Image (cartoon, rainbow, N blue to C red; front, top):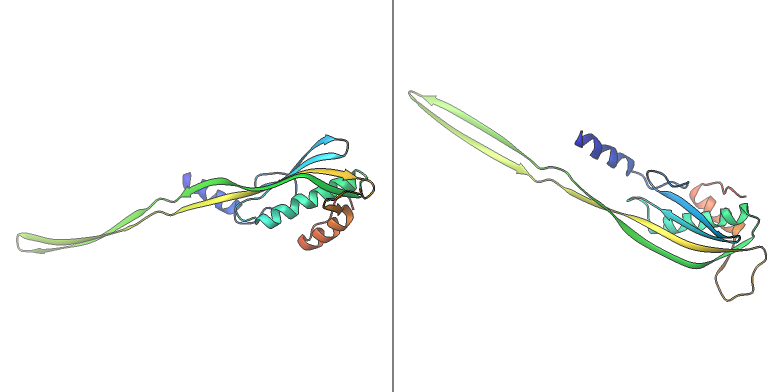
Length: 166
C-alpha cells in the first residue's frame, strides 16, 4: 500500500502544473476584492518553474481583466515564493548470499551481505501571488501597466493556451 502511494505521488508530480483552476497538482485561484481589484495566485508543483508560475498568474490576471471588460491592469502587490512540499524517502534494503559445503562431519560456509541505502527526494511548490488592479483606460501613473489582450496573446502563444476572455 505504501509503495503504491509513493508511486502515485511520483506519477502525479511527473509533469509541471498545467494552466487551469487549482486542483491536485496546482493551478490558479482568484478572489475579487473590489469591483476592479482581484487577488490572483498560481501554485505549481515540483516540476513547475518559478517563471512559468509567474507567467500563469500574469495570464490569469489578463483573462480576468478581459472577461470583466477591462483593457489594462497593474499590480498593487506581487510576490513569488517556494513552499516546501515535503520529502519522500524510499526504504533501503539488503541482500545476503551464502554458500555451505560439507566435508565429513563438518560444515564450512560463508556469507556476504550488501546493503543499499534508501533515497530521499525533496520538492518545492512555487507560488505567485498578485493583487491586481484593473482599468478600462490606460491610467496615467508611474507604474508597470499591462495591456490585457496583449498578455493573453503573448503568454497564450508561449504556453499553447487559449485565453478565456479573448
